[in-house]
Length: 274
Image 1 (tube, one colour):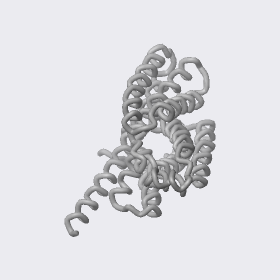
Image 2 (cartoon, helix red, strand yellow):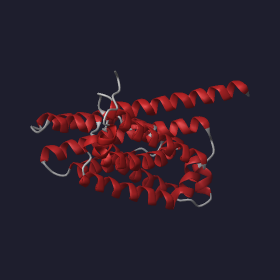
Image 3 (cartoon, one colour):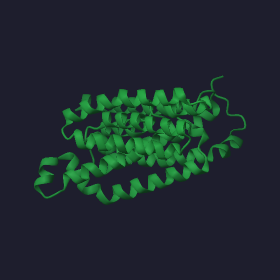
Image 4 (cartoon, one colour):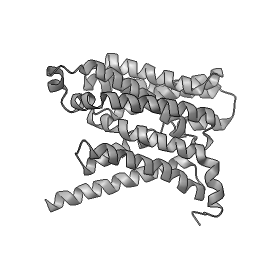
């Protein structure tokens, strides 16, 4: 039997923090993912996640706060991309350089770390089932900052993302918005890395938004669908994992991917009927 849901009601309270973390990440990932897609920065998410992983790994090695190290690494990556990658071509080249450097630096730090092997593995593939109260407080604080900031800059950021030349001509400070968005993206990546790991962060920050934009182009409906897909992926992955024998992260990524495939199928069927 693949799934066993015996004593399911007794298992759910044990992952209460994880479920709350999944809801927070679903909200943040679904909202910021829309801008990641419209600004063509899905590659940047991966680049930032590698530096976030490196920062967390170094923090783990030095015995300091891992979340702070992850945030520090993400912000350094965002700063480098923002300063040196103004144009899309330059940005992609810079990210391609950052990714192996960050991954290599993180692996070196983990190889020198003499602590529990689970801590090493968790930074790469996530440890959502081990979310404690302190980590949840960090996550809640970061999520609140991102959601409030997005609410404040949502309209000008949408304008600047869809038509940057016209937005700049209309007086929108596109440069400042780009920097602000990169900082928010860095925070979102750092929060996600703590839960789903550096290798799987795209499943919450890119895939839900990519799925939503496959079935709608509405600026109001797309964020709603994106958040909904991210919530189903994160929360659904945890609930499925309770009855399965595998870690949680593969369930989250699988649910997210299945939703994407369904959305592609819907888009294809619409195209055939038109």
